[in-house]
Length: 462
Image 1: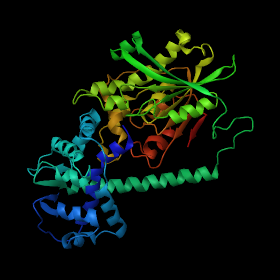
Image 2: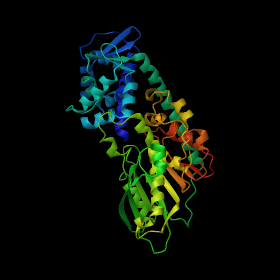
Image 3: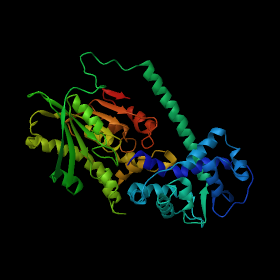
Image 4: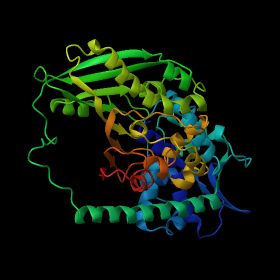
């Protein structure tokens, strides 16, 4: 799933939370029929949706809204307006497909804790319907269009719950910035060593030409059937460098994230091929763009979604096994690819895939500990995905592939599916790549803390 889609799904309650701070003072007033009602125990206050729309469009506030805006610093007023203007261009079909997925359904349930219909009932179905209708709105999918399409005369917001979440959000931001500052300072004090003169720099395009070749097969192996109960189509693109005859070619496998595809990192595959690496870009058919946008509403169950935590690493093992047994599929490179010492690059869900193949087992106790929190409490959207793994039978899965000898995990999801005990089992070189502005897998919780769980001597954080 791409970052913009999931990020926006949490934007509505978060943008409403910005408005929460308007109600920490001021007097009670009456507003128009189309309104957002903020409830704190027995006390209720409301804001006119029309006034919010005017403020979002022009920056001008009504007298009533202005009396509340004065409680906010100018920077927060600008943030509120930007939040109300946030727009996502997605078709109603795409939004419906997303919200009917297990991840979308779970998020709607969590968001409905804050939002109620006029009859004061939590209603995930109402919120989902409003999001789908707002996607068809000529003005696009915005927080205000969602509110306008909410199937109730008014929308109630639990202010007490919202304030608690807002406080936790502010604490999370402060903690994140503090930890990132420490990491940055350590990077300055202990800079990365320069590239040895005898090692080729990968910063520039290499000198080798390459051939791109599609590849497909069906995994009906007993191992797959035993673990998942189904066969699975496997698709990949090979990027094969044209190197001198007899030269052994190193292999890199690229595993995409949720809602991406084998084409998502084509630029990276081509770049590596230009440096003499044979690159295998896999398509994980159960968690790719095509799967996300093609399943019928309600078709994908939590069990089916959970099996992807097994299917993904099995995809890699199958490809390596198949190419080893049928080297003629690599003509004219048969026998020239080093399939016994493979490096993996995985992004997000692909990072999980790579770490699992490297030897980190799923930890179901860790899942139980982490999956009691909601996304709106933790601000970690990746938990929506990670906690799907709870639907698997809780046992030890042997998914390690000893041919994977090095891993680069880019924004990997880790905190719930792995534990210090599982990541400490990794013995090969591991690099975590973190991004401080990642909206799905927050750097501190998903990369920086888990990095400290690694015990392999060759471990790197970028």
